[in-house]
Length: 509
Image (spheres, rainbow, N blue to C red):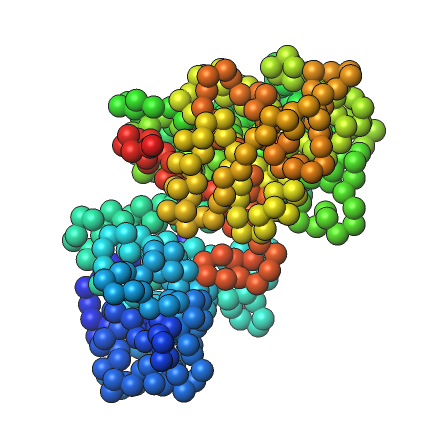
């Protein structure tokens, strides 16, 4: 993990391997942002003109490397675009700062120490720049080259080793707290990314459960793991039905963080399909290659509970990881089979590739038994949600409009794109089954909403619940941008952590 340091040293006096400055897109060309005044002075006040001559515009995420002039203690200056210059009396948007810091950190892979001279007007800006730098510095290299070859002879470059935030005061309580929080959250997001990127032959349900158990115990979080014998005995027909086609049996993991002064209890439920072939309803060619990411919801839940524990928030948070591998075999669940869920409700399986809702159904029922104040489930659940909202936005459904609105606002606040979605009652009719209480498929149109309606059937009566379908943003297959890498993104971790913070302080609307 990249080290994070706060420093009041001047941009012209700090020794580092690179110096990051912000540049914005002005009406007449690039404009040097606050924080880089000393750097601009070293260029005789012509830094903007130099960047303009090199074709830099200040557009968001744009990076331009320059040799440092005399007067600076660094060999390289990296100018990163912040987007449009803010209106008069306004500050740079926190997400713009986060993305700029992330883009700069990505561009500096292989660098030991970089100083960030970006606009830091308050503690919120410190959080944004710190998060961006730490998230942008991420790289998953566990399976590339060897430790001795890292960065040499074609081996992968290592992430930025240290990020120094200039203008952030280490003795200022607000700045210090902001940096510490950013470090905790970014660390856990990156751990979620590691889990998502781990090949499925190494991250089986049992292996995931072992990682969660070891980490939770390290941070004083209580752990309970139900193996295939306990799941069968307990009547978890959804989880067992999905997992019985695989040689790697399923697990249900409960991780519970408690605070002695907590007044509220949140339950987070994560879909953890460590590999999804579609089962008997096999996915077509071209749709299997990234299905190691189908446990992204469980990774987000696990990482967020650990982050809450590290932050010591005054709220009880229980995480439920519904882990299974969905494979075709002679023992696999078939289309037409009927499963008896943990709730007692029977489900006719019309499509074994609609498996996430089956494991979540059992976990939601189990989570409801503890009567938490609210349940939030997170899942890469439907391709329909990707068609509706694209690759960067997750959908939010809920049985309470105010709660759905609050989660949407929280997600936007922390820089995670989301959109509130409805749960139309008329779509429930499509899941009627002549054989069972409900089918796991309904109308094709509005498939993401149908999945949400299915899940709602397993939420305890009177419990506030929301469903986050992160199928789009959970795994990024394109070129990296901002602080978002190629591969697992850790989507929803920051939203869940902020939800816990708001609940702990009573600020949740």
